[in-house]
Image 1 (cartoon, rainbow, N blue to C red):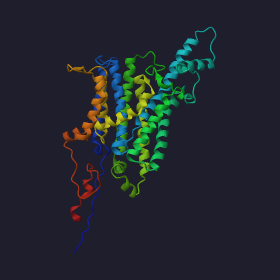
Image 2: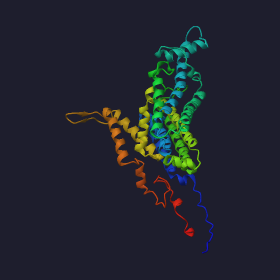
Image 3: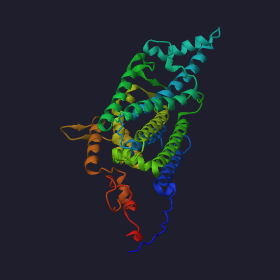
Length: 425
């Protein structure tokens, strides 16, 4: 018996775009959508779209970004986090503190400067404190407002506070090897504790009143809301596009393979020598920071933020969006968030007409949550790939035939790993 040695050439390494063709399609669709909204807006176009609707679309783009972050941590890494909307809210509070302080400072300064005797710096600070915290019976700035007068430092807080919270929480949870439903309960408990704390008047963030008037950007008073809505819409579109590209890079290549391996069989990946906890901590912290950035762009368009925005139900909604859109597909998460968000605005905003059955009148403002819950159950039972799975049918994409057992993930594109070269047979 003779053996022949063959010099098998390694398969050429495919480029990032070749591995992720959805990136170009997503960016193209986002660019066309952004341009279309701009041309139809009141400030820069025909005026077909109202300013309030442009703000709704801008907020929807922010929700798409946080949904993509949720898909990475859940759909790709297998961590069902029920607390990512808490990071979203923290980002909103961080930028909201500067917006409220700077706007109040302008109003107070203009008012006091009209007095016969010019005010001192301390009098201005005291008046600002009274205006902001008078609603909760206080006039002194809490310690957490120490950097509220600096836009640069508050922007750093948008990243640093949720990043540090996610890093500490993830390190404690992952090093203890808490997984599955227990980890989900821990993330939900963290969110509940944070929201209950913020509801208190002595939390330093005005309790249940929250922060309001965030749509008024200091220094841009002369710029109308129509123009501001387009500015924030473009900023939200830019953040969504950059976030999509970044996460597509994270979940591709060797890093993406390890992340998906952790989702499919964490024990096997650990036995292969990979630091599972470090990968999970990286994904958890990165997605938390991106969620906070999305929140920092969302709430100036919403105009107000209160502790109810951080309640655990918000994070549950986020998981529902990802499931309906298609877990494990970045574009699916974005589609799910946009679809459910816009549909929710239509049903709860009075756009959907009531249905009179004679014996009962269906009012969609009351029935929307029930409809959303039924949709989640239907998707889970009959269409586990979600809306994003429709693109697989349109592109005729299917799981490849594999030789041998290479893990429980039947959808992984690993056919080349199971086939032997003809010369070796």
